[in-house]
Length: 634
Image (cartoon, rainbow, N blue to C red; front, side, top):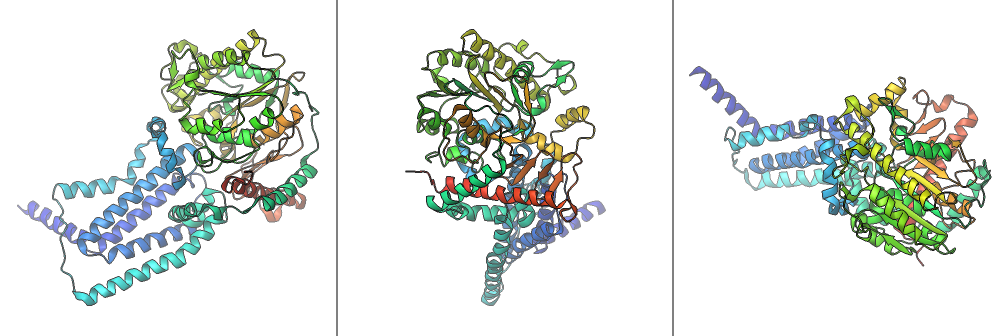
């Protein structure tokens, strides 16, 4: 009996708290700790958040708590629960997305919901038990309400005067939020292209608010509003680039002139698998052989967004992609001086091939508007008896793509985009598992293990592609460029880091970040063999390099010739990579992982690093303006 009385007293106290303004304060505290949990699992994995980020987070939550607390009791409690739920979903979604792409969501990506089925395939591999922390409090409260252990009561109103006071209080709170906090948000977000920095400056909530505001007026993000202003600054940028970095380190001019050009985009092939073994067997023996015999680029970096479409966009336009997938989804009607146009207007037969349907990533519309003589999608391949994860298997795709090349007028330029090694790396649909020729051992049935197995199959299929090219006499005198489109694994995948640390026990955080952006890359150029180039390059550099090799004018290109002396690259999330240093809001030494003290370094080095930052912003400003305002449209 005494025990029941104690339980009833406890229930009464809980009900009193839940039906009082104190409940809103408790929700605010819970939201604060959820947000800190989010930071610690994303932007602060290896670099603690600063006091300003914490203070900003408290400020945003305080405004939310203040506005909710003026509501009547029933409305106050339900509003607190709903806002807690919505913000928890936001933090959870950002956390999941960040786990794979090292990026947070944007409202611009709503267009990508049409690919929800494909995206959902990857979701199970990204879920972790600790992410329940975002929802456990909500689940408990809702269960208590459902089982009537707690009740939401309606309190009496206190007259018109009290209602007026509450209304004034609400208006003042909103006024302060809009006219004070938004300035803080805008300054924090618009001073950087790096979303990690944006969040640190303006909090995750400030970032999302600013993102919504920016998306309602996208044109404000473009520095150059018309072609003349753009061209004037572009010419200046290119002139400075030519003066500073135009010296050729290798003289390969015109070696590709009049030859067939085959560009192969390898799905998710990161650089770290190249020339590596697991349990005594090479992961990618065929790709290794191709790279060893030809030109191997060991330091090729993807752009900041981890979609195949963004890689394709950057390769063919030598401009940065917009928000994840948006270059193909939203800006597909834009005009660029693209690589297909460059070759088509100089007498080459141009083609594009992919083993999926044309609706995926809007490729039918994207490539249908370009100067491409032939687009080949899944329905255009006769033998479709084997699908892997919904795409035509790489083996069937590669072999039949060569059959199609045989019928093309020569010289031709073709882009071939593989797909079998796509997330979730399960190789679902592969009919003969013996084509996976390695044993991943302790990594079996992990995400990393599945990735390595998919690399083995992708390499097997690539070997069939090379064999078929040789069989059809299309190999020896053709120029063949291969590169990975983007990362396959998250930056801090535990099994991957375990694997990497077996190779390099002193692996530091900066090297882990670079491992995330580095992809495989090689070039077969007739007359050149066994050359390894270690300087940093990226996808922007492909079009100007191919123009140089083929003796063509490449028009507007933000990249530079891979064989010239430029010794750094920048990504469109405000990262810069040199052979020795890495910029991520601060400069770090790659070898040691230590942050540079800019006040105590060599004067000439400091001048160089600051120049790279300035040129990086110029490059991104030019690219964003070109895309948003479609400045090359005639």
